[in-house]
Length: 360
Image 1 (tube, one colour):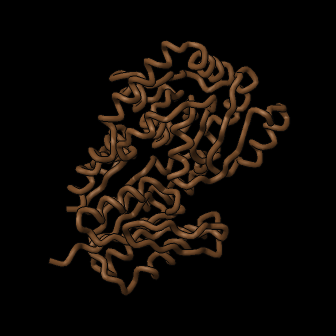
Image 2: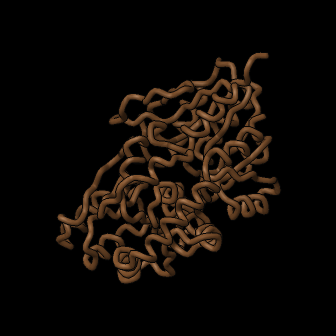
C-alpha cells in the first residue's frame, strides 16, 4: 500500500523549529511520506539534511497582514499540483493555505495550535487584527478533521471555545542521557525569541546583582533594545548574544549551562497558558530553571520541582531566584535530580505515540 503523503505548513524557519522537525521525523519513521514547508528569510542558511522532504517559500513582504496573505498564497501554489493526502496547518498563520489545499487537492486538514495565537503580546490591544485571526482560526478548526496543541490548559480552552476536542502533544525533547551527564559551567542560559513579554529586560537588570554570565540564544523584535540596555547598565562583561543556533549546537550549549531561564509576562494569556519547549530542554539537560508560577509549570512542579517558580516578574525577584540556585548547592542538586527523574516521563518517545494516532 502506498504511504500517506503528509504536508506540514509553517511560517517559521524550519532549520530551527524543533517541534516540527520532531513531528516530521517521527511521521517518516512510521512509514509516512512527509514534506515540511516553511519560510525562507533572505539571510537564511541552507537547509539541514533530514530524513524527510523539505522546502521553503520566500516572500517579498515581510511584515503585517499583507505578509501573511502573501505567505499563504505562496504556500498554496507551492503545493498545488502535488499529491497530498493530509495537510497540517501549524497555527492560524498557515490555515488559509491549508484550507485551500484541502479544497483544491481534496486533502484531509489537521490543525496544530502551538500557542494561544490571538493573545500573543504582538496582537495586544489590536482588536481588529485579533478578530481577523480569531475568525480564521474558528473557520479552520471547523473544517479540520483533527486538532492538537501543546498542553492540557490550551486543549481545554480551545475545546470549550471551538466545541471540538484537542489532543495534547507536548513539545518535549527526545530522551538523551548524554546531555544530563555534561559538566556544568557558570552560564545562565536563555533560549528563545528576543521578543516583547519574555521578561528579558528584568533579566538583564537582575544581572546587576548576580555574579555569573548570561547567554541569550535567539533573535527577535527587541534585540537592538536589549543590546542598548546592556550598554546602559554597563554589564557587557556579563552578557553574550549568540543569535540563532542550530538545534545540535543548542543542545550542547544547554547541557553545559548551570541555570536555565524562562520568564514571561502574566498579562498575556498566551504566556499564562504556555508550556515552553525550553522548560523541557532545561529539564532534559539536568539544568535547574527559573520559571513563572503559571498553571502548566505549577502542575509539573507539584510532581517534582525542577527549579524555582517566581510570582512576579521584576529584577529583584529574578536575581533572588538566580542567587538562591547559585548559593544553595543542596537545593540545586535536589532540583537537578528531579530534572533527571522527570525527563524519563516527559520525552518525545511518549508524545510520539499520541502523534502517530492522530495521523493514522
